[in-house]
Image (cartoon, rainbow, N blue to C red):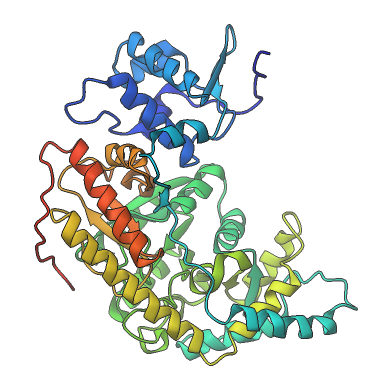
Amino acid sequence: MEPLIPLTGRVSGLKLATLLGSWRRSGSRHGAADLAAAVELLVLDGRLPLGTRLPAERELADALDVSRTLIGAALDKLRADGLVASRRGAGSWIASPGGRGRETMLPSGEDLIDLAQACPPAIAGLVPAVDAARKALADHLGENGYHVRGLRILRERIARRYTERGLPTNAGQVMITNGAHHAFVQVLRMLAGPGDRVLVEQPTYPNALEAIGAAHAIGVPVPLDPATGWDVVGIEAALRQSAPRLAYFVADFQNPTGLRLDAAGRERLAAALSRARTPSIIDETLVELDLEGDPADGPPPLGAFAGDLGITIGSASKSHWAGLRLGWIRASEDVIGRLVAARFAVDLGSPVFEQLVLAELLDDGGSALAHRREETRALRDALTGALNWYCPDWTFTVPPGGLSLWCRLPEPMSTRLAVAAAGHGVQVAPGSRFGVHGGLERWLRLPYTLPADRLFEAVRRLGAAAASVSATPATATPIAVQVT
């Protein structure tokens, strides 16, 4: 039976070449195998969805500056693995998420370790909160269940936390969403449209870049130095030169670098945005994961300096559990009113029961979050120790919070390493995922959200994968790394 032709989008040769990055392994003579493995990584990573039409062989050969013979051989391998389907006159397309081919790549007896997701398991105390929420649910069963702004009790407790951290907030300034990414998309849809520029840090959260692209807006990157952090002078220049419609910043344990902007820097950044009259989305998804103390003792929220131009988004996904699928927007009451009116075109509110659960979790006096920070700190230290042993030539700065290390590799090999790592049973997101236009081939994000023994095993496999793609194999001698 011939495969059905999908009715989905097509990726151009130039776009696919950009996604592939530096796909060829250093010194490798197996170009077709390298290319097939790189395409498989894009599929596993979700950047080539099921049904995506691939460019013609000649077009892709020109874009990659390789022979059509190599392209044909790579496609033959992908078809043999069931990843790509083709039909004469209709071309080729992604036909499978790559499960069968992936299994054959793993060494015997090894399972896949996923380091592409920076998501911890559920927080301690979730089950008691569920039990308490079951009792509170009875008070809401006589209602219709639609709360576009969110349950008042949850909005009050989120507002209380903002106030404790130095940003006075009332329940009318909070809207509950289905996660921080949903919140980001809601604000993006309201404030930016096709062709509008959106200022973003480089590197930054990949799903934010995907949302900007899906809105047909244009991401404008401003470099974020992994050592010194935000360059406010450079941001001011970018504001003047590009006149963005919106800006997006992660000032607390920035994803992926883990950096945190100090109070003085927040004040300067907010002043620059105010002078340019540029609204900003301030992502505080990771703010509660302060591994050096309580976030209430840290710098005030960036929103405290930004005034009405600052729109803060938050989430329970990293601090409590992604399975709750709850986030929020904190803004002026006028902006919240506009967001509520616009929300009816997308959805009609967030689930009531999950909101009751989160409200219970936020009313425990902070004990569960304190325990989460303690656990996360131990996992961070376990990952740094594993890297010092298995990958001593990788460098990084130990972050004061968040969920990941931003590692500098000894050579530009992030995409090649991600391809090789899949063959060793580890899935990682290459550095190019965190850049507006790709690049960042010397960088790799490693989350510390798995158990310590899994982190050690993942890094051991990564060390072996790095040795297979590096011109200079890594040694096993531990060395000291910079800690700030």
